[in-house]
Image 1 (cartoon, one colour):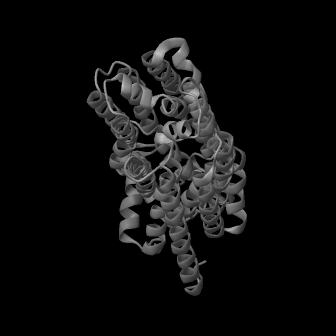
Image 2 (image 1 turned 135 degrees about the horizontal axis):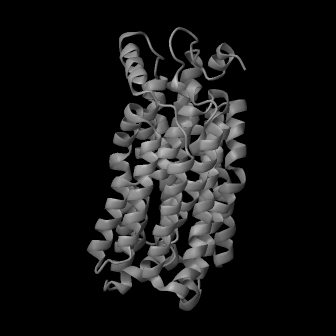
Amino acid sequence: MSAQMKSVSYGLQPGAGRAGYAERNADYWKRNLAVSTFGSFTTLVSLSMLLPFLPLYVEQLGVQPASAVVQWSGVAFGATFLGTAITAPLWGHLADRFGRKPMLVRAAIGMAVLMSLIGMAHNVVELVVLRLLAGLVGGYASASVVMIGTQAPRDKSGWALGVLSTGALTGNLVGPLVGGFLPGLVGIRGTFFVGGAMIALAAAATIFLVREDFDRTLDANARVAENTTPSISTDRWLIFSLLVTAMMVLLANMSIEPIITVYIGQLGVPRNHLAQTAGFVMAASAFGSMLTAARLGALADRVGSGKVIVACLLATSALMLPQAFVTQWWQLALLRGLMGMTIAGLLPSVARLVRHAVDESKAGKTLGYLQSAQFSGQVIGPLVGGQIGAWVGLREVFFVTAALLALCAGLNQWIRVRTTQRGRA
């Protein structure tokens, strides 16, 4: 492929001087995608494997009664994502200034250290603080989205982000399963050391295998030029709707997961089987998403992200409601598996639309804000689920989440109609 043809493929303007960031990394992005997918998988396994035994760990740290265990479980689980939500825009901005690879290395090393320290917590306050710090310095999956989202060709960005999402979703699938049996082998505290070792492996792979052609001077000059010349006209309502959607995706998925062990207990599962059963049910959602994430990302490349987003939001909302009426744990697992299949198309489609809507030199920063919104949903979801579950009832969590998803679908449809009427669809 000639340099000029490659420039067009990447949505860049051929011209004088060195090529743009995406074009310079045209030979690396597939390799980096493979490593980032592996790294996202290992880090998400480590983060999600505590879900089945988190209430048990909180109880082990001296928290009583059961309602307090539920509330502290939600706080402890959401703390990591609160930290990530706070710092994701900063890391995205620094990625635009200093390169994407350093952000991946920083996230992996920080998470490996803090995951191990969590296994040495003496009380629930230390647990919450350490998980908050893990979020502040971590965010490997977020940094991967920034790298792949800015390196992949625009016409393949949906597929690439879908593949990356599959790695993270597979980690979310395997993590709860591992968390269901690993504490029985190495103990709850030992499980965190295993998780830290897995993330350290991802750090080593990132350091030695990821390649990036980042020219700090050239890209800084590009940012200055784009600040003084006409750029892509950004629809602020469009960006707002995408940020809300990213938040809602994780809110919907996480609103019940931190307290799902308690919910399954209400369905008659014996206490000595709670962790394993909860791990299986949690894995069902990730398994469904793993099957469809790349396919729905590719579909967004063909038919447009807006259509995929609206359809997936409506389908997920519809599948949320019957989860409130299940009488057996396997029914819940089946419904969450189907919900995982519909929710999988949202994040790759949202990130793809952002990639197309902003200038290349600002893509990292904007994708950072997108990750911040996404992790805000992971903070709000467990808090909402924990509070409603503790004071109203666990089944009501599903009703609230379904309504929020339907409202979000309406917002996105309004944006689609609005942009179509303005001739920008």
